[in-house]
Image (cartoon, rainbow over all chains, first blue to last red; front, side, top):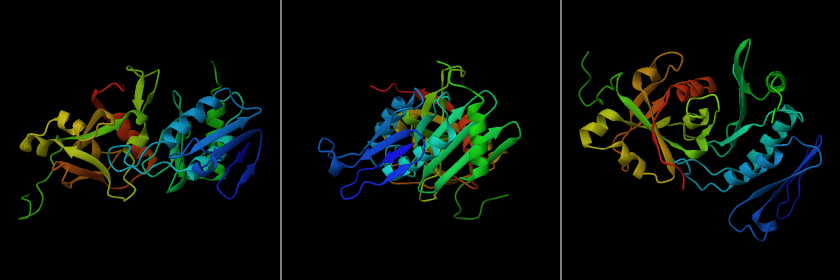
Length: 161
Length: 136
C-alpha cells in the first residue's frame, strides 16, 4: 500500500504493499478550501476500499466539538497512520472495518464478529489495539504481537458479499 | 455515613447518567435487535482527561431539566443513552462518577477512573438508548 500525501511544500510517500493513498491539503486542492481530503488509489485492494475512502473523508470534515462534548477535529496525520495499520491487517477478502471518529482527533477501526472483535484506535494518544479472541481480551499500544492477533481474527471471517 | 459539610451530595447507585450519542458512534450491527450498536468510541474520556461527560438524573430532576433539554443543548447529536451509576461502579467497568456542573449544564458530571478499551466496550454494551432523532 502506498500513501501519497501532497502538502503545500512536500509530498511524503509511504510505500508498502499494493494500495495507494493520497491525502490532499487545502493548499493543494483548490476546490477544498476549508477541509482536507484523502484519496486512495488502489490497483489491487479489497472491494470496500472506496467506502473507506468516503467514510474517512466524511470524518475529516467534522468540526471541533462534533460530539457535542468538545471533541477535536480529525487530523490527516492520524488517518494516514491508521491506513498504514489497516494495510497490515487485511487481505483482499477481509471484511470491511467500521470506522468511527475519536474525540482525540483520530479514528477507530472496528471489526465485530460473533465471538471475536478487533479495535484499532489512532489519535493523539497514539495507536492502540484491542483484540478479543478465543484466548481472552488483549489490548495495548501497537505491537507486532497485537497486530498479528488482530490480523488472525480478521482473517478468520472472510468478506462475504 | 454522612457526607462532610460542603462536600457534593453522593450519587446514588440508581441515578441514571445520560450521555448524548452522535450518529458517528451509532454503527451498523445486523445481529443487534435494532440493527445498530454504540461504538466503544462513544465512551472515550475527553482528551483533557476529565472523564466521560454525562448528565446526572438526580440533578436534572431537582432543576427540572428534561432529556429533551439535554438534546437541545447539542443539535448535532441524534441519540441519548444512559447507564446507571451502579453499572459504572461495578465490575467489569469499575469506574466512578463525579458531579462537575458547567454553565451550560448544571447537571453535568464525569465518569472517572481507570480507562481501557475493554471498559469502554462494556459501557457501550450497557448503555441503553433513550431515544434517537433520525438524521435529516
